[in-house]
Amino acid sequence: MYRYFIKIPWWLRKLYPAYVWKMPATEKTVYLTFDDGPHPTITPWVLQELKKYDAKATFFCIGKNVVSHPEVYQQILSEGHATANHSFNHLNGWKTRNDAYVKDVEAASDVIKSKLFRPPYGRVRKAQARELTNAMKPSKLKVVMWDVLSGDFDRAIKPEKCLKNVLSNTEPGSIIVFHDSDKAYENLLFSLPDVLKQLSAKGFSFRKIE
Image (cartoon, rainbow, N blue to C red; front, side, top):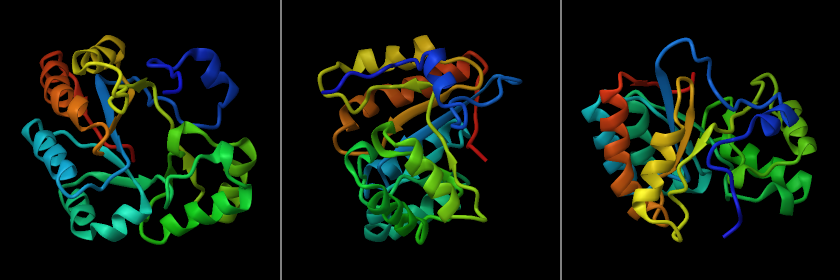
């Protein structure tokens, strides 16, 4: 497993100022995001948990999964959540030619109507991001990263650690990453209900990224 930051450091945000790392902290609001879905069983479970707290979230979907599970994708939208582009085939930008990467993201945009894009693994070259913005005008694609990484995808950590990662690092305006995927499910199953419960008890509300 590659090393990763749980809390994104200030200097990394400075290196890529055009990307969205956090939302304005004017209110006690946080932004839950879910990558890699839609999944036929995990995503509906996530939606059920969110509904208990009237929480809205943003789902960064993989195009091929949208094609495979269109009914789940529509359920996300019908319940008032936002969907966003997470590429079609979950390509790593650092390991993919620029032209192939751009085509893959464009293919996802055919089934995911959003100007928001999160690169898989958080790995995208500046040239790729620039080409995407130019290629997909007038939509003005916006790269959305995150402020807090739950680590739910990491099978080397215990579910309790995943929960602590979120609760210890969340602040107003935080963009938090979970995954509605098989790999993350054990950690997600344990941590998401408590994240919703404990942050709600502290007065936080949950919004989607507009």
